[in-house]
Image (cartoon, rainbow, N blue to C red; front, side, top):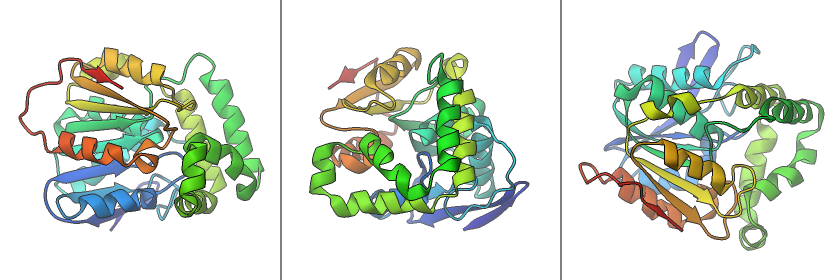
Length: 270
């Protein structure tokens, strides 16, 4: 489906029937990152996966944007589909967007899964992400893959699943370099820590034990701040945990189907 926005056209996958789950992809990816998970969930859920501005099939006017802007895009999409409240799954950049969405529009979100993400990339975030933005726009896409692949996946997964690694790499290569850079700058400006108390929805936190992009300490900070959360630290897993570690799928499904089950009570497991 496509939706006209002030900045261009928002494109989204819309498949399946049942309770609505919105999947928010990571930096320099697209809705198609989620293809294996969409196929897994769509027999039981209506899965909506938008492409962020300038990513995938969504267009973009070239103007700077913020994580809050990305969250408002998702809010507009949910409203357009008259779908809320929905469950939201966000990974990496998509997790930042999900935090902003849930805190700004709590009426639209009933449950959250936040994977490999943070509410704040730290005191040096602006400088670090500006460097990432410069590299994104100046280096050929293919030359950026080695850096990205090492962050995304463990060496064992790279060796065992080369076709899946290549599939994700091809999505990255197709992503517009300037949109990638703009998204880097948005992440460098993002600080959602003051809004975490407003994120009252039951939240499953997932993070790879070996994720050095958003390490377990960042997930731990979210767990401490979110009123109703459970933290799962995943062994031998790096940054794209929902792609690398299929064990997360059963955790995700259980959480989405929990409905009126009791709150987590601050659980944390490895």
